[in-house]
Image 1 (cartoon, rainbow, N blue to C red):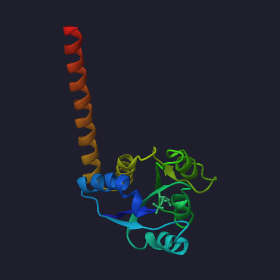
Image 2 (image 1 turned 30 degrees about the vertical axis):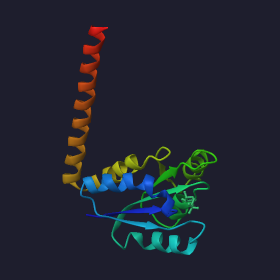
Image 3 (image 1 turned 90 degrees about the vertical axis):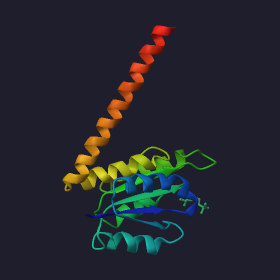
Image 4 (image 1 turned 60 degrees about the vertical axis):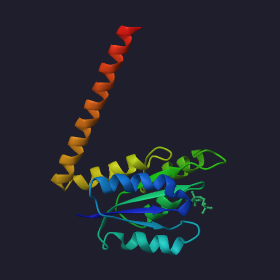
Length: 165
Ligand code: RP5
């Protein structure tokens, strides 16, 4: 199976990024996580992206806050799909990172999840790998069925409460 690369702009992003790692682990998907920055280590980020496909990666998740150029720079150096996680920062609460990550120029897409949306980034990465992996596809179907059952249970509980009002 191809690996997922999980890149974060700083170790200070880990509290958010760990949710993606937890999700990838729950699917048994191989991954590597690294700290790398579009601004502080631009050459390393470019080199990682250029070699990612030959190094066995199938998808790259990039998490960054503030002027979050990491996902865009990585996407500029690879044809692998790149998923961006804009991380919340103190000054602008993640709007800065959201816009910097999502507003890519035509030709260089970054599939951007919501602010701090690490879990969804991991699920999207798994969905990409599942296109060529039936075991993963089955796991995804089963998770979705569990989610539906969970919501139906909540709805049934709500109906019960409404009868008691
Ligand atoms: C971004 O700047 C990082 O992704 C992080 O979200 C933010 C702050 O980085 P630190 O100053 O905490 O290293 O590049």
